[in-house]
Length: 119
Image (cartoon, rainbow, N blue to C red; front, side, top):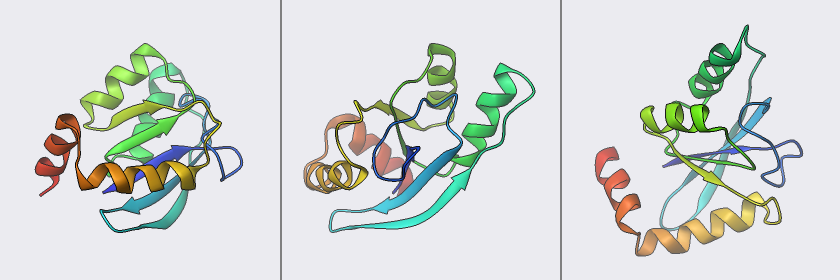
């Protein structure tokens, strides 16, 4: 599955979803992870356009990690079948990916449902 990270430095999850200009996208499975690409986002005309552009950039991702996300944006991300996760920024993207590999070996119910949907 693909995971998007809102990042300013390409090392940690340290950007707000609504202000994020770059998402680092990785593919992760039960064995390993692989960097796919950086996806750049341009500013929108207004709040809704801003959210739409960010969702469009990560629409093929299953999970979004960001430092913050507003309620309206979070609801729209969830409706787009992307699961938003807030991160404190203390962990690196690599640490989060390694934890995800461990979690995927025995995923919680919400993640099992997501994985079944992808199959």
